[in-house]
Image 1 (spheres, rainbow, N blue to C red):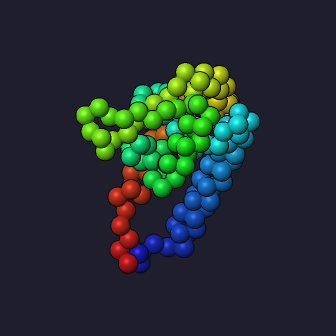
Image 2: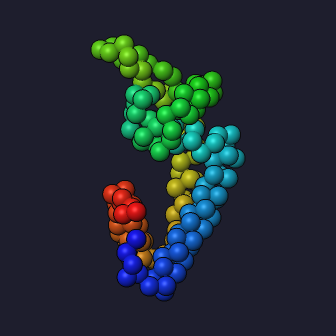
Image 3: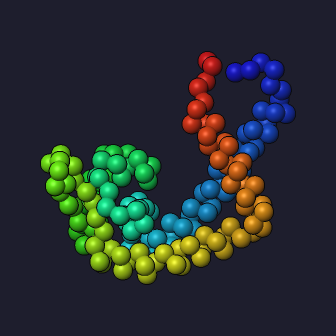
Length: 154
């Protein structure tokens, strides 16, 4: 760590980390509660939403797109398949690849939920003006990109 960092800077960074973490937790609690009211968990919703908006996806790539460990994907896919919200489709060109594809029942579920989901998120985040949201987006991206590349010097 850089030895020139003073106590006030360290305290400010810790405060930002705590505030950011608490804000994320508060927003996510509202989102998760809404999703659970519709009989799904947040991961199932994320997979279904991905398939709805992006089309069929190789099972092996879904975890990376929704930030889920690959070992959990099979379990989530199985649950969604049992609910008839998606189906597995073999790749015609490569037997090693299997796609997850949303079904009509899955589309109906997402279409019944998504408008209220995005309105709820908008309502929570509307405490910030459009300009403040743009600044927040820019600053949070900056933090995220830096964290992705960060390598501790110790």
